[in-house]
Image: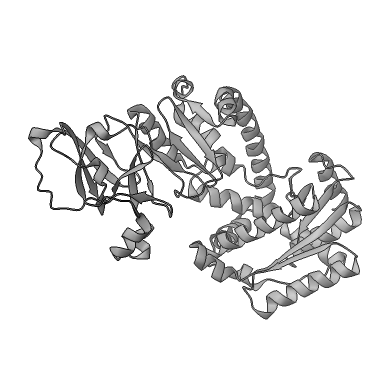
Length: 440
Protein backbone atom coordinates (compact mmCIF):
# COMPACT_ATOMS: atom_id res chain seq x y z
CA UNK A 1 0.00 0.00 0.00
CA UNK A 2 2.85 2.37 0.85
CA UNK A 3 4.46 1.98 -2.60
CA UNK A 4 1.16 2.77 -4.34
CA UNK A 5 0.65 5.71 -1.98
CA UNK A 6 4.08 7.16 -2.86
CA UNK A 7 3.25 7.02 -6.59
CA UNK A 8 0.38 9.46 -6.05
CA UNK A 9 2.82 12.25 -5.25
CA UNK A 10 4.37 11.87 -8.70
CA UNK A 11 0.94 11.52 -10.35
CA UNK A 12 -0.12 14.86 -8.85
CA UNK A 13 3.23 16.59 -9.44
CA UNK A 14 3.94 17.16 -5.76
CA UNK A 15 7.61 17.87 -5.14
CA UNK A 16 9.50 16.66 -2.07
CA UNK A 17 10.12 20.20 -0.77
CA UNK A 18 6.44 21.19 -0.83
CA UNK A 19 4.51 21.61 2.43
CA UNK A 20 1.34 19.56 2.85
CA UNK A 21 -1.47 20.20 5.32
CA UNK A 22 -3.30 16.99 6.34
CA UNK A 23 -6.93 17.11 7.45
CA UNK A 24 -7.18 14.64 10.34
CA UNK A 25 -10.47 13.85 12.07
CA UNK A 26 -9.23 10.92 14.16
CA UNK A 27 -11.10 8.28 12.16
CA UNK A 28 -9.38 5.32 10.55
CA UNK A 29 -9.12 6.92 7.09
CA UNK A 30 -7.35 10.11 8.14
CA UNK A 31 -5.19 8.33 10.71
CA UNK A 32 -3.95 5.89 8.06
CA UNK A 33 -3.28 8.83 5.74
CA UNK A 34 -1.30 10.46 8.53
CA UNK A 35 0.71 7.29 9.18
CA UNK A 36 1.56 6.95 5.49
CA UNK A 37 2.52 10.61 5.29
CA UNK A 38 4.77 10.26 8.34
CA UNK A 39 6.60 7.35 6.69
CA UNK A 40 6.96 9.25 3.41
CA UNK A 41 9.07 11.97 5.12
CA UNK A 42 7.33 14.83 3.26
CA UNK A 43 6.98 18.20 5.00
CA UNK A 44 3.54 18.33 6.57
CA UNK A 45 1.31 19.69 9.31
CA UNK A 46 -1.95 18.41 10.82
CA UNK A 47 -5.27 20.27 11.07
CA UNK A 48 -8.22 19.09 13.17
CA UNK A 49 -11.70 20.58 13.56
CA UNK A 50 -13.80 19.73 16.61
CA UNK A 51 -17.43 20.33 15.59
CA UNK A 52 -18.81 19.56 19.09
CA UNK A 53 -21.35 17.21 17.50
CA UNK A 54 -20.71 14.20 19.76
CA UNK A 55 -20.09 15.87 23.09
CA UNK A 56 -17.24 14.31 25.06
CA UNK A 57 -16.37 11.95 22.18
CA UNK A 58 -15.50 14.93 19.99
CA UNK A 59 -13.14 16.27 22.67
CA UNK A 60 -11.48 12.85 23.06
CA UNK A 61 -10.92 12.73 19.27
CA UNK A 62 -9.18 16.09 19.42
CA UNK A 63 -7.00 15.11 22.38
CA UNK A 64 -5.87 11.91 20.63
CA UNK A 65 -4.84 13.82 17.49
CA UNK A 66 -3.12 16.49 19.58
CA UNK A 67 -1.21 13.87 21.60
CA UNK A 68 0.06 11.97 18.56
CA UNK A 69 1.08 15.24 16.86
CA UNK A 70 3.13 16.09 19.97
CA UNK A 71 4.73 12.63 19.98
CA UNK A 72 5.66 12.99 16.32
CA UNK A 73 6.72 16.60 16.79
CA UNK A 74 4.30 17.57 14.05
CA UNK A 75 2.88 21.12 13.60
CA UNK A 76 -0.70 20.88 14.91
CA UNK A 77 -3.63 23.25 14.37
CA UNK A 78 -7.10 22.84 15.86
CA UNK A 79 -10.38 24.68 15.88
CA UNK A 80 -13.38 24.00 18.14
CA UNK A 81 -16.81 25.23 17.01
CA UNK A 82 -20.49 24.60 17.66
CA UNK A 83 -21.52 23.31 14.24
CA UNK A 84 -25.20 23.01 15.19
CA UNK A 85 -25.40 26.65 16.27
CA UNK A 86 -23.46 27.75 13.18
CA UNK A 87 -25.90 25.82 10.96
CA UNK A 88 -28.90 27.50 12.62
CA UNK A 89 -27.42 30.97 12.25
CA UNK A 90 -26.43 30.33 8.63
CA UNK A 91 -29.70 28.64 7.65
CA UNK A 92 -27.93 25.58 6.20
CA UNK A 93 -27.72 21.88 7.04
CA UNK A 94 -25.23 20.67 9.64
CA UNK A 95 -23.27 18.90 6.90
CA UNK A 96 -23.01 22.09 4.84
CA UNK A 97 -22.08 24.09 7.94
CA UNK A 98 -19.34 21.62 8.88
CA UNK A 99 -17.94 21.65 5.35
CA UNK A 100 -17.87 25.46 5.29
CA UNK A 101 -16.17 25.66 8.69
CA UNK A 102 -13.65 22.97 7.82
CA UNK A 103 -12.51 24.31 4.47
CA UNK A 104 -12.46 27.95 5.61
CA UNK A 105 -10.15 26.88 8.44
CA UNK A 106 -7.93 24.89 6.10
CA UNK A 107 -7.71 27.79 3.65
CA UNK A 108 -6.75 30.14 6.45
CA UNK A 109 -3.96 27.79 7.56
CA UNK A 110 -2.69 27.28 4.02
CA UNK A 111 -2.37 31.01 3.48
CA UNK A 112 -0.94 31.85 6.91
CA UNK A 113 1.62 29.02 7.09
CA UNK A 114 2.33 28.73 3.35
CA UNK A 115 1.17 25.16 2.78
CA UNK A 116 1.20 24.16 -0.89
CA UNK A 117 -1.37 21.39 -0.69
CA UNK A 118 -4.28 20.10 1.40
CA UNK A 119 -4.39 16.30 1.79
CA UNK A 120 -7.67 14.60 2.70
CA UNK A 121 -8.42 10.92 3.29
CA UNK A 122 -11.10 10.36 0.64
CA UNK A 123 -11.07 6.74 -0.55
CA UNK A 124 -12.73 4.69 -3.29
CA UNK A 125 -16.08 4.26 -1.53
CA UNK A 126 -16.20 8.05 -0.99
CA UNK A 127 -15.69 8.45 -4.74
CA UNK A 128 -18.51 6.00 -5.52
CA UNK A 129 -20.82 7.69 -3.00
CA UNK A 130 -20.09 11.08 -4.56
CA UNK A 131 -20.94 9.66 -7.99
CA UNK A 132 -24.32 8.42 -6.69
CA UNK A 133 -25.03 11.66 -4.80
CA UNK A 134 -24.38 13.74 -7.91
CA UNK A 135 -26.40 11.36 -10.06
CA UNK A 136 -29.28 11.72 -7.60
CA UNK A 137 -29.06 15.53 -7.58
CA UNK A 138 -28.78 15.86 -11.34
CA UNK A 139 -25.39 16.79 -12.70
CA UNK A 140 -23.17 16.84 -15.75
CA UNK A 141 -20.09 14.80 -16.58
CA UNK A 142 -18.01 16.75 -14.07
CA UNK A 143 -20.20 15.62 -11.16
CA UNK A 144 -20.33 12.05 -12.40
CA UNK A 145 -16.53 11.99 -12.60
CA UNK A 146 -16.54 12.04 -8.80
CA UNK A 147 -13.67 13.27 -6.62
CA UNK A 148 -10.42 14.44 -8.18
CA UNK A 149 -6.91 14.43 -6.76
CA UNK A 150 -4.71 17.41 -7.65
CA UNK A 151 -1.59 19.10 -6.35
CA UNK A 152 -3.76 21.63 -4.48
CA UNK A 153 -6.34 19.11 -3.21
CA UNK A 154 -4.38 15.91 -2.72
CA UNK A 155 -6.42 12.70 -2.26
CA UNK A 156 -3.79 9.91 -2.29
CA UNK A 157 -6.17 7.25 -0.90
CA UNK A 158 -8.75 7.51 -3.70
CA UNK A 159 -7.57 4.26 -5.24
CA UNK A 160 -7.93 2.28 -1.98
CA UNK A 161 -11.02 0.61 -0.57
CA UNK A 162 -12.19 0.98 3.00
CA UNK A 163 -11.27 -2.66 3.71
CA UNK A 164 -7.73 -2.07 2.44
CA UNK A 165 -7.41 0.96 4.70
CA UNK A 166 -8.66 -1.00 7.74
CA UNK A 167 -6.29 -3.85 6.93
CA UNK A 168 -3.35 -1.44 6.82
CA UNK A 169 -4.43 0.07 10.16
CA UNK A 170 -4.53 -3.37 11.78
CA UNK A 171 -1.19 -4.50 10.35
CA UNK A 172 0.57 -1.27 11.31
CA UNK A 173 -1.07 -0.70 14.72
CA UNK A 174 -2.53 2.65 13.64
CA UNK A 175 -4.46 4.27 16.48
CA UNK A 176 -7.88 5.70 15.55
CA UNK A 177 -11.35 6.33 16.91
CA UNK A 178 -14.68 5.18 15.48
CA UNK A 179 -17.26 7.86 14.65
CA UNK A 180 -20.66 6.32 15.43
CA UNK A 181 -22.41 8.99 13.38
CA UNK A 182 -21.13 7.20 10.27
CA UNK A 183 -23.71 4.49 10.98
CA UNK A 184 -26.60 6.97 10.99
CA UNK A 185 -28.71 7.04 7.84
CA UNK A 186 -29.89 10.59 8.52
CA UNK A 187 -27.45 11.92 5.90
CA UNK A 188 -27.72 11.11 2.19
CA UNK A 189 -24.13 9.91 1.93
CA UNK A 190 -24.60 7.39 4.74
CA UNK A 191 -27.92 6.24 3.24
CA UNK A 192 -26.26 5.51 -0.09
CA UNK A 193 -23.43 3.73 1.75
CA UNK A 194 -25.68 1.38 3.74
CA UNK A 195 -28.78 1.05 1.58
CA UNK A 196 -27.34 1.05 -1.94
CA UNK A 197 -23.64 0.25 -2.01
CA UNK A 198 -23.58 -2.43 0.72
CA UNK A 199 -26.30 -4.67 -0.83
CA UNK A 200 -24.94 -3.90 -4.29
CA UNK A 201 -21.53 -5.27 -3.24
CA UNK A 202 -23.22 -8.41 -1.93
CA UNK A 203 -24.86 -8.94 -5.29
CA UNK A 204 -21.72 -7.99 -7.24
CA UNK A 205 -18.49 -8.60 -5.28
CA UNK A 206 -16.53 -6.90 -8.09
CA UNK A 207 -18.53 -3.68 -7.78
CA UNK A 208 -15.72 -1.50 -6.42
CA UNK A 209 -13.25 -2.76 -9.01
CA UNK A 210 -15.79 -2.01 -11.76
CA UNK A 211 -16.61 1.41 -10.34
CA UNK A 212 -12.90 2.25 -10.06
CA UNK A 213 -12.63 1.66 -13.82
CA UNK A 214 -15.88 3.54 -14.54
CA UNK A 215 -14.80 6.58 -12.54
CA UNK A 216 -11.37 6.54 -14.19
CA UNK A 217 -13.01 6.59 -17.64
CA UNK A 218 -15.44 9.34 -16.58
CA UNK A 219 -12.57 11.50 -15.28
CA UNK A 220 -10.71 11.06 -18.59
CA UNK A 221 -13.89 11.84 -20.54
CA UNK A 222 -14.41 15.01 -18.51
CA UNK A 223 -10.79 16.10 -19.05
CA UNK A 224 -11.19 15.75 -22.83
CA UNK A 225 -14.55 17.53 -22.78
CA UNK A 226 -13.20 20.28 -20.54
CA UNK A 227 -10.27 20.90 -22.87
CA UNK A 228 -12.59 21.21 -25.87
CA UNK A 229 -15.06 23.47 -24.04
CA UNK A 230 -12.23 25.74 -22.86
CA UNK A 231 -11.10 26.14 -26.46
CA UNK A 232 -14.61 27.03 -27.59
CA UNK A 233 -15.16 29.47 -24.73
CA UNK A 234 -11.72 31.14 -24.91
CA UNK A 235 -13.19 34.54 -25.82
CA UNK A 236 -15.70 34.33 -22.95
CA UNK A 237 -12.91 33.56 -20.48
CA UNK A 238 -10.70 36.34 -21.81
CA UNK A 239 -13.45 38.94 -21.38
CA UNK A 240 -14.45 37.46 -18.02
CA UNK A 241 -10.92 38.05 -16.72
CA UNK A 242 -11.46 41.76 -17.47
CA UNK A 243 -14.75 41.77 -15.53
CA UNK A 244 -17.30 41.69 -18.35
CA UNK A 245 -18.75 39.66 -21.23
CA UNK A 246 -20.05 41.40 -24.35
CA UNK A 247 -23.49 40.50 -25.67
CA UNK A 248 -21.93 40.14 -29.14
CA UNK A 249 -19.59 37.41 -27.83
CA UNK A 250 -22.51 35.49 -26.33
CA UNK A 251 -24.54 35.90 -29.52
CA UNK A 252 -21.87 34.11 -31.58
CA UNK A 253 -22.10 30.94 -29.47
CA UNK A 254 -23.94 27.91 -30.84
CA UNK A 255 -24.77 26.61 -27.37
CA UNK A 256 -25.16 29.82 -25.41
CA UNK A 257 -26.48 28.31 -22.18
CA UNK A 258 -23.89 25.53 -22.10
CA UNK A 259 -20.81 27.70 -22.62
CA UNK A 260 -22.04 30.58 -20.47
CA UNK A 261 -22.79 28.19 -17.62
CA UNK A 262 -19.34 26.65 -18.06
CA UNK A 263 -17.58 29.98 -17.38
CA UNK A 264 -20.03 31.35 -14.78
CA UNK A 265 -20.67 28.27 -12.62
CA UNK A 266 -17.23 28.51 -10.92
CA UNK A 267 -18.37 31.93 -9.66
CA UNK A 268 -21.39 30.34 -7.99
CA UNK A 269 -24.10 30.90 -10.62
CA UNK A 270 -26.68 28.17 -11.24
CA UNK A 271 -27.99 26.89 -14.57
CA UNK A 272 -31.37 28.50 -13.80
CA UNK A 273 -29.68 31.87 -13.28
CA UNK A 274 -27.80 31.50 -16.57
CA UNK A 275 -31.06 30.72 -18.39
CA UNK A 276 -32.71 33.78 -16.83
CA UNK A 277 -29.65 35.87 -17.69
CA UNK A 278 -29.98 34.91 -21.37
CA UNK A 279 -33.65 35.96 -21.29
CA UNK A 280 -32.63 39.34 -19.80
CA UNK A 281 -30.00 39.82 -22.50
CA UNK A 282 -32.51 38.98 -25.23
CA UNK A 283 -35.08 41.41 -23.81
CA UNK A 284 -32.36 44.00 -23.01
CA UNK A 285 -33.45 44.31 -19.39
CA UNK A 286 -30.79 46.78 -18.32
CA UNK A 287 -30.14 46.99 -14.59
CA UNK A 288 -30.97 43.39 -13.76
CA UNK A 289 -28.77 41.86 -11.04
CA UNK A 290 -27.89 38.19 -10.51
CA UNK A 291 -26.24 37.14 -7.26
CA UNK A 292 -23.68 34.33 -7.22
CA UNK A 293 -21.78 32.83 -4.33
CA UNK A 294 -18.97 35.40 -4.25
CA UNK A 295 -19.72 37.49 -7.34
CA UNK A 296 -22.64 39.27 -8.91
CA UNK A 297 -23.68 40.00 -12.49
CA UNK A 298 -24.98 43.39 -13.58
CA UNK A 299 -26.77 43.56 -16.94
CA UNK A 300 -25.66 46.69 -18.82
CA UNK A 301 -26.65 47.95 -22.29
CA UNK A 302 -24.18 45.95 -24.40
CA UNK A 303 -22.52 43.66 -21.89
CA UNK A 304 -22.79 41.97 -18.52
CA UNK A 305 -20.44 43.16 -15.79
CA UNK A 306 -19.09 40.79 -13.15
CA UNK A 307 -18.58 42.33 -9.71
CA UNK A 308 -16.44 40.21 -7.39
CA UNK A 309 -16.51 40.11 -3.62
CA UNK A 310 -20.14 41.24 -3.13
CA UNK A 311 -22.43 38.70 -1.44
CA UNK A 312 -25.58 40.73 -0.93
CA UNK A 313 -27.48 43.55 -2.55
CA UNK A 314 -26.51 46.31 -0.12
CA UNK A 315 -24.22 47.96 -2.68
CA UNK A 316 -26.33 47.30 -5.78
CA UNK A 317 -27.63 50.15 -7.89
CA UNK A 318 -30.44 49.22 -10.27
CA UNK A 319 -30.70 51.45 -13.35
CA UNK A 320 -34.03 52.61 -14.78
CA UNK A 321 -33.87 53.66 -18.42
CA UNK A 322 -36.02 56.41 -19.91
CA UNK A 323 -38.41 54.03 -21.68
CA UNK A 324 -38.68 51.47 -18.89
CA UNK A 325 -42.28 50.57 -18.03
CA UNK A 326 -41.75 47.76 -15.51
CA UNK A 327 -39.03 46.36 -13.25
CA UNK A 328 -39.29 43.34 -10.98
CA UNK A 329 -35.95 43.64 -9.16
CA UNK A 330 -35.26 44.62 -6.46
CA UNK A 331 -38.99 45.31 -6.11
CA UNK A 332 -41.82 45.42 -8.63
CA UNK A 333 -42.44 48.96 -9.92
CA UNK A 334 -44.48 50.21 -12.88
CA UNK A 335 -43.63 53.43 -14.74
CA UNK A 336 -46.17 55.31 -16.86
CA UNK A 337 -45.49 58.47 -18.83
CA UNK A 338 -48.31 61.01 -18.68
CA UNK A 339 -49.21 64.46 -19.93
CA UNK A 340 -50.50 67.06 -17.48
CA UNK A 341 -54.03 66.81 -18.85
CA UNK A 342 -54.08 63.07 -17.97
CA UNK A 343 -53.03 63.73 -14.42
CA UNK A 344 -55.35 62.95 -11.53
CA UNK A 345 -53.94 64.65 -8.42
CA UNK A 346 -56.03 62.54 -6.04
CA UNK A 347 -53.54 59.78 -5.30
CA UNK A 348 -54.64 57.95 -2.17
CA UNK A 349 -51.98 55.23 -1.93
CA UNK A 350 -48.47 55.75 -0.56
CA UNK A 351 -47.36 53.12 -3.03
CA UNK A 352 -47.96 55.46 -5.95
CA UNK A 353 -46.52 58.87 -6.83
CA UNK A 354 -46.49 61.20 -9.85
CA UNK A 355 -43.46 63.40 -10.51
CA UNK A 356 -42.38 66.06 -12.98
CA UNK A 357 -40.58 64.11 -15.70
CA UNK A 358 -38.64 67.16 -16.94
CA UNK A 359 -36.83 67.34 -13.61
CA UNK A 360 -35.51 63.79 -13.88
CA UNK A 361 -32.11 62.80 -15.22
CA UNK A 362 -32.04 59.28 -16.70
CA UNK A 363 -31.13 56.60 -16.05
CA UNK A 364 -32.82 56.75 -12.67
CA UNK A 365 -31.40 54.57 -9.92
CA UNK A 366 -32.87 52.35 -7.24
CA UNK A 367 -30.91 51.12 -4.24
CA UNK A 368 -31.36 50.46 -0.57
CA UNK A 369 -31.28 53.60 1.59
CA UNK A 370 -28.09 54.28 3.52
CA UNK A 371 -27.36 56.10 6.78
CA UNK A 372 -26.11 59.26 5.02
CA UNK A 373 -29.12 59.71 2.69
CA UNK A 374 -31.08 62.98 2.89
CA UNK A 375 -34.15 64.28 1.08
CA UNK A 376 -36.51 67.24 1.13
CA UNK A 377 -39.86 65.73 2.14
CA UNK A 378 -42.92 67.11 0.38
CA UNK A 379 -44.00 70.41 1.96
CA UNK A 380 -40.68 71.10 3.70
CA UNK A 381 -38.13 73.81 2.85
CA UNK A 382 -35.03 72.01 4.16
CA UNK A 383 -33.58 68.52 3.96
CA UNK A 384 -34.00 65.74 6.49
CA UNK A 385 -32.13 62.51 7.08
CA UNK A 386 -33.98 59.48 5.83
CA UNK A 387 -33.02 57.64 9.02
CA UNK A 388 -34.96 60.30 10.99
CA UNK A 389 -37.93 60.06 8.62
CA UNK A 390 -38.12 56.29 9.14
CA UNK A 391 -37.98 56.79 12.92
CA UNK A 392 -40.82 59.34 12.73
CA UNK A 393 -42.85 56.87 10.66
CA UNK A 394 -42.16 54.15 13.27
CA UNK A 395 -40.83 51.79 10.63
CA UNK A 396 -39.62 48.50 12.12
CA UNK A 397 -36.03 47.31 11.76
CA UNK A 398 -37.12 44.52 9.40
CA UNK A 399 -38.99 47.03 7.20
CA UNK A 400 -36.02 49.41 7.22
CA UNK A 401 -33.81 46.67 5.81
CA UNK A 402 -36.17 46.36 2.85
CA UNK A 403 -36.62 50.10 2.19
CA UNK A 404 -35.39 51.53 -1.13
CA UNK A 405 -34.90 54.99 -2.59
CA UNK A 406 -35.44 56.18 -6.17
CA UNK A 407 -32.69 58.56 -7.27
CA UNK A 408 -32.21 61.08 -10.06
CA UNK A 409 -28.45 61.49 -10.24
CA UNK A 410 -27.68 61.63 -6.50
CA UNK A 411 -30.94 63.27 -5.39
CA UNK A 412 -33.67 61.22 -3.72
CA UNK A 413 -36.87 61.42 -5.75
CA UNK A 414 -38.92 59.05 -3.65
CA UNK A 415 -38.43 57.17 -0.41
CA UNK A 416 -40.35 54.34 -1.99
CA UNK A 417 -43.68 53.70 -0.36
CA UNK A 418 -43.25 56.52 2.17
CA UNK A 419 -42.29 60.06 1.11
CA UNK A 420 -41.95 62.09 -2.13
CA UNK A 421 -39.26 64.73 -2.46
CA UNK A 422 -40.45 68.35 -2.78
CA UNK A 423 -38.00 69.06 -5.62
CA UNK A 424 -39.71 66.62 -8.01
CA UNK A 425 -43.37 67.31 -7.31
CA UNK A 426 -45.86 68.26 -10.02
CA UNK A 427 -46.39 72.04 -10.29
CA UNK A 428 -48.55 74.32 -12.45
CA UNK A 429 -45.64 74.59 -14.89
CA UNK A 430 -45.26 70.82 -15.26
CA UNK A 431 -46.17 69.36 -18.68
CA UNK A 432 -44.66 65.87 -18.88
CA UNK A 433 -45.19 63.60 -15.90
CA UNK A 434 -44.17 60.13 -14.72
CA UNK A 435 -46.44 57.94 -12.65
CA UNK A 436 -44.55 55.48 -10.42
CA UNK A 437 -46.37 52.64 -8.73
CA UNK A 438 -44.79 50.18 -6.31
CA UNK A 439 -46.15 46.65 -5.66
CA UNK A 440 -44.91 45.00 -2.44
